[in-house]
Length: 65
Image (cartoon, rainbow, N blue to C red; front, side, top):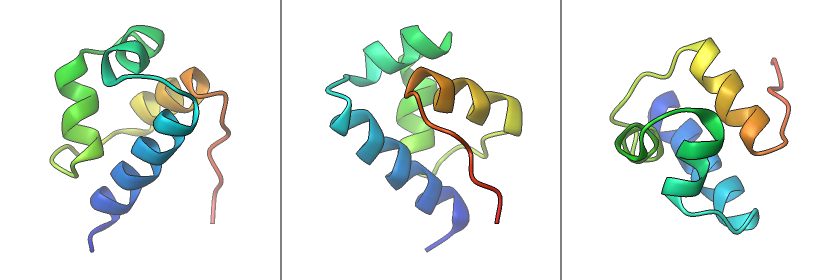
């Protein structure tokens, strides 16, 4: 599994735990629903700025390894 896919799965899990739809998360993060879909499905290499916006919308911190 690629890192893109791992990140996407985590974001989808956190989004569902928060009770948000992809549209809700997109609105909170200032992104499009299509972008959230692509991130969650590992079809988009998310930059740190976008990842930060998604994390903040999910009330999560980005952990650095």
